[in-house]
Amino acid sequence: MQDIADIPADRPVLIAGPTASGKSALAAAIVARQGGVIVNADALQVYSCWRVLTARPTEAEEAELPHRLYGHVGRQEVHSVGHWLADVRAVLAEGLRPVIVGGTGLYFSALTEGLATIPHTPPEVRALADARLTEAGLAAMVQDLDPATSARIDLRNPARVQRAWEVLRATGRGLADWQAETGAPLLPLDRVVPLVIRPDRDWLAERIDRRFDAMMAAGALEEAHQALADWDPALPSSRAIGAPELIAHLRGESDLDTAIAAAKLASRQYAKRQRTWFRNRMRDWREVPLP
Image 1 (tube, rainbow, N blue to C red):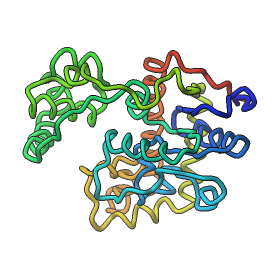
Image 2: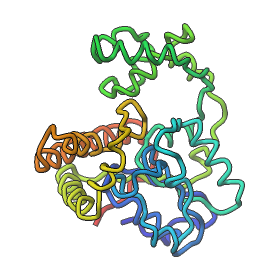
Image 3: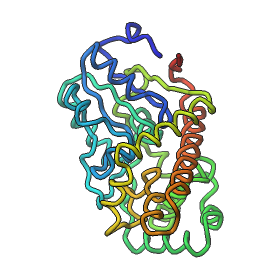
């Protein structure tokens, strides 16, 4: 892994990497040696309901080193990249050197490149988008987008496509048009140490499978059971990798082995999307060598 001695102790550090790549351990090592605070940049680790299933730091790990923005959002709440940036701004105001770590590429892009101020999507537009995606499918929703936006977003990601569709429907302007008016970034790349982990696919796949087995042993199924009574697949918190598969098992729609296999596959597919984002959008970041 990265030699911590090479990292200036007075600069913020950003650590991006796919799921199960070891980025949280690197962040903890940096803060343990140089001081500072570990700040979450994972869109699902913000939710209080998923400690095990999102591999959030344990209670003991959070007690040992300063951590921020982990598990502070309720399961029913919507937490956007704009909310996260506001939370990060508050953390920076504390004066501690941040080591910001996670796998949500959009968070890092907004942090280092700025975020456009886009009007809130009205509930009626969100309902239209949900219906469009359900009835016509992802491909039809992609066809509705403007060309500039289609060229910029991950067209295989239903959440990203639906968000772009909603913006266009609600404002009459494409998401790319709004992003062209992006304000100044909170932490430009030239003010930070940007690190990215780009592991080999097979190496990562093996780690993902082992980690999900460890999650199951640590109580992931019990976490899913707690969410079962009022499960709402439309909530952002319900996108936790592995949660829909375990919920399906708890509802009697699949046996446990099938659910686990499906969750591992979903994790590997998510890691592939992350690796693609990092490869395309983080070319100027310093690659972290693996053992």
